Image (cartoon, rainbow, N blue to C red; front, top):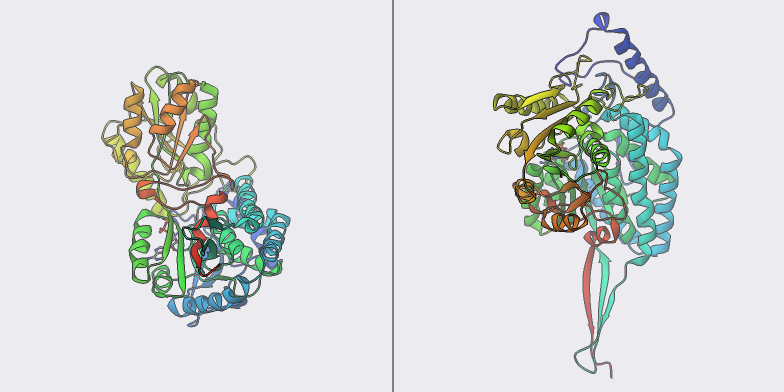
Length: 518
Ligand code: ADP
């Protein structure tokens, strides 16, 4: 394993001589895990096309770095349009036989893949921590969550039912068949390097589609390890392909190909809009899971303990770097001060550090750009009258560590209320009435997840119905599960992932009319 630092991956790159003892220990732990994963073949440094491990055709590579230490973990191929076209061709060929297997046979392959992922839960979790910075316990949790989609769709593969429609003429019979859409391009972000892939690939494979995966270049190693396990599980070559490198070129090739019939994307709203526009040329299906701006409403009648626990969970998961993290915490005036104090106390005691550290619950942010965005939004809020109760600046650990932060006196017009902060910053806004809370909560183009806390049953229904969001958590901050539909309304996206609804995104409906049946 190389021990160079990634250029530009952090504003602050410590010199080895000036490193604190803690930083040195932190690096050693990560380095020994990386060395172990490397020697056991768990770190893959090539793309996967047609069942073969492949370098970029021109030999170019990019570094994959550990955001907590800056160490280079490995180099992966910097692929582009040519490799993507070959991956599409492999997926297209493999579709012919994979789609013709019985659902039971595909189900067995998926089940085996699930078993292998669970058998390697620890190593995959370590890989997620190494390349994404997520605390190890949370990373292992992601592995179970990611694997659950494979298990679920291994079962659901056998339940892709069609319909028989009562005919309108006596000599006719009318059927509806559901068939796999074909080759799927799955483009995924860095914040859930495994789960965002399995949430797309599992339903796609279950119903007979084949895939070209384009993971984030920041976290491709988990994707490659998972793909390797898919081959070990007996999923045939070409069914799962992985390319990475030049995102725009790869995206372009996926969009331009008439063989790719569907794009499944999780990422920023800006890129999602580009993909949606680009898919028009070949009229592909798209499902998009884009940015959120989640409100988390604490009503005066909330159970304080429940509200604290739920809000902490939804705000600080993955150091605030998920699209369903609470972005605006709206607190009713009667409970505002009490909540702010109790919340600040809890946030103050959160341990920040390398994800391998004992008791660490907050890892680094993914890169410099992420820190700069957080700093910009915090400064904007301060300049417009918000106050910092806890945190509010980069952490003394340096690099991309940021202090868990609580701000009060935040207003709806501040940037921090308008944009996704994607970091460990909790802005508290005050409201008076339920109507005001709903109006504030819905005052955004986003519509992914919303949360609220109340002990009033009537209010639970009323507010859940009034919130313009695809997902609503009532007295609960962690709502994601493979059995429920995940997705947004408004500019947070199209389509749903997970649950019985998720597989529909990978199916075409075919109406068959049989005539002359007398
Ligand atoms: P994030 O800010 O979460 O990284 P992005 O939308 O930038 O969100 O990235 C999500 C995924 O989309 C990544 O795999 C990234 O490489 C990919 N991506 C970025 N730009 C494009 C593009 N023009 N075409 C296709 N994929 C892209």
